[in-house]
Length: 324
Image 1: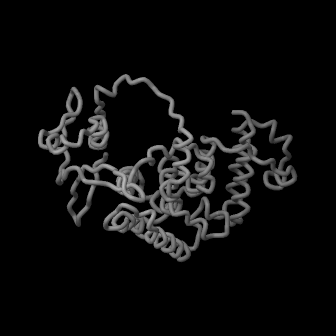
Image 2: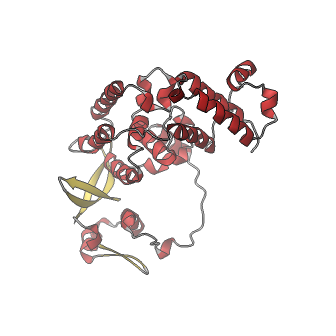
Image 3: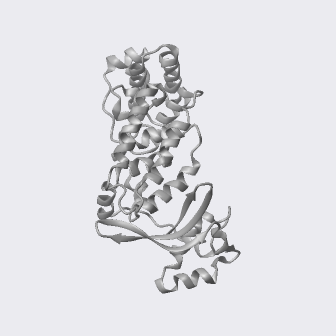
């Protein structure tokens, strides 16, 4: 169950909906029209959440789970509100079952990449299959309409500087470019080619019947916001190197396979020192060496894009094996 936000021109209207099984997949049904203000039917009080009698009467014949109803209206709760029933609950470990893992693998790649970017901020999602399945549990059992309403809420946290990177990662535009920098530096690519890649992926997604299943009017109303994010926003011009460096550093926060060993002679060519000397350094000391080399090899300083990416990848492989 969820509250759908429907924009009609300059006005906004809300509906209470739930996902239901349809022949061939999942669809949705409207349970109640909440009008322009869902606050008129829900009250977040000292002792919990209460609802207008008119709404409860409308839902009485459905035998709904009140916890599910509370969760649907949760996004509209004031800051700091906590339902008394949810206080002090015991922590439970979340381990996806085999059936859930299989269902996650069947999720649409566009949904998985959107969730991965919104939760991690990583532009390079070429290794998305290595991400823990727990990240995608929220996407299971939801119709296309409920999924899009979920992403609408999550995308509110995006800043203007992130808009283009989000679209680039979500639509996997990097696959249209042969150079490695397309994975982490979409701003360095030719703008005309980026626009062509976007239109190709946008049209392909728009015509994907499996993706738009269960939406009577098609997916256009939901997809057009990505055209706005791509064409109405620009890549950030400042702090490019710092963003790339942080992206690679944040990449260490999640599990990934043991890195392949780097050829010692190539390490010496890139960093100007051998592996024995690097092993004697702490992570912080080696990071200083990396930053100095990265600044001199950065494309903005006249360096080669591919060589710069190789430096970053080599740094990641080496530092992963160093103790904290």
